[in-house]
Length: 117
Image (cartoon, rainbow, N blue to C red):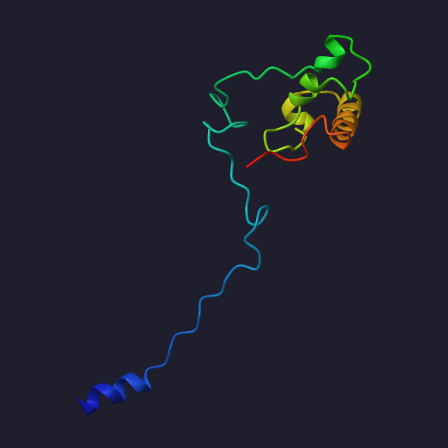
């Protein structure tokens, strides 16, 4: 038993293995994407996503009224957040008018600031 305890205390630990300096995105050699992944080789995308078109431009709606609550509710998520234009497909000009109308409508209590829990 004395031999066992003396061998354990005299053992030295090995030095830790060195880590790469940076292991985040863009580090190391680039590898090609697999064929099945989006943007990859043949057979990459399984479906065609249509480009979203602005609802207000197609219907030629120029003024967005803060009183039109039914229209504005379609652009507000159920938690009360304004839905971004990359999800709705609204153009930049109409998204700015839309967010302004939503904020005005919230201030006079036509729309809720947040969802009820």
